[in-house]
Image (cartoon, rainbow, N blue to C red; front, side, top):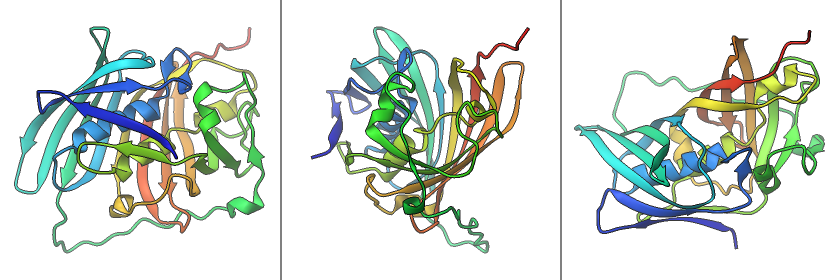
Length: 270
């Protein structure tokens, strides 16, 4: 049986109680992909249409234990609904998410993303980051690395390969299972692409994160299946880096496009 992440409704339809599990640490905070999944579950409850985009800000470190998830519908139009969700813990806002849900419409445009083609996972070596060398949450995932840009290798600022959950991630909301929530939990599991350009460990954290979901993102796929990932750093200056990533399924179909602003704290050599 997989890990179950439950959000529990309260007397208010816009307020939920959650219990953030242990063993999902990422430095001082809980793994950002897990926080994003909670925010998505709160946004999904009771909303029609498919998730089209998510924008998440990590305001402060979310810790394991009880927390409150709040939701606010910003606008409900004829085809799109915009919502805001936030997680509060110990009287402080920890993460905020803005979400757009949209009904499918007939259109004169039909542009499909090019497939993400990587070497098959069974042809690649499993990467074991090692106990104490990687955040706690990585023990829940399995990685197959593609290319030569490994973390701390001094190579290109890139990350590429496959990822899957070691056990099924069951995200339960008052409504239904949410595949976009699983995608958020999986897509952020990779080490930041900029770490491949370094040759020594450094601290860092995501400041903001934006994800666009394709229609294929709403096809239910077990999180224990392999998912492809390709990320590159577009720039890293003055302690801030921009990374864009593509996330796909085992058939090469694109499920999501991701963009992150990352705060890094490496120090130049004297």
